[in-house]
Amino acid sequence: KGGFVTDGSRVYFLRRAGEQSELAWVALTGGGTAPIHASWREPTVIGVSPNGLELLVRSQVEMTAGTVPDAELWVLPVQGGTPRRVGDIIAFDAAWVPDGNRLVYSKGPDAFLTTLDGVQRRKLLSVPGGAWAFRWSPDGTRLRFAVRDLRTSSWAIWEAEPDGGKPHPLLPGWGNR
Image (cartoon, rainbow, N blue to C red; front, side, top):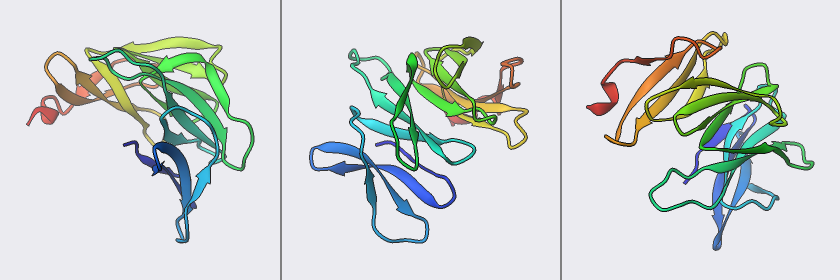
């Protein structure tokens, strides 16, 4: 459960520690794993900041049966320090914006941009389903993401401009094969 991310020198991931899940890391050169000590409910590391100094972490919140699990978003300094909550945002997924000062996140069919403190937010786009797995092109001119239609259980890869303009499926119907 959960994925892994890298900053180029370490791999960050979720591991089971007895009955609990905890974040951990291992050097790309090998060696043992080391825990990241923080008390979150069902944590998942979902991104590394563009400068490699901070992690973006989801912390599970209560969920109603049959709904998509949303989570609190946290920014955790890699070199140690106090995790910071991204305002009061509850989101399904999120990713760093290439400038390193903002995040893109989804809540239901909508995607938003926010500052790292969660104070300044604006709706970016809406899609027919849930948006997740956000990835920016290397030059920051395109945002790609997956869209899951919860009614049909189909999914597709979508693309939009950085300001949320012109959202459209990329390779329509590809995920339904």
